[in-house]
Image: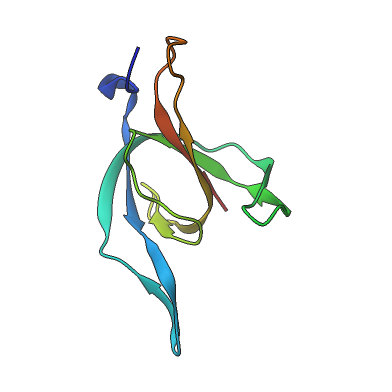
Amino acid sequence: MGRIPRRFLVHRVEIEPYLGRSGTGPLYGPMREARCLLDEKTRNVRSPSGDLVVSSSTAYCPPGTTAPALSRVTLPDGRKTTVIASLNRDAGRLGTPDHVEVQLE
């Protein structure tokens, strides 16, 4: 099937990719708008460090979307949140859409 169909990407979020820490706090890259399908459902997920954390929503974005853990995300309603984990979902030859699953605090 390839990429997630564009007609499903009905929401827009703004992502500031996390670059690391400095002496004054976290560093972020330039803000980029990303089209996505936003699912605002609370669920438990594992962080990259293996901790069980609560995710308030998940953004399903096109392949190639960059949103490393700890990135800042502004949701369509203006709420700001943080990326817990960003997972590439490549289905290979299974016929399901490839996408990036961005789990948000």
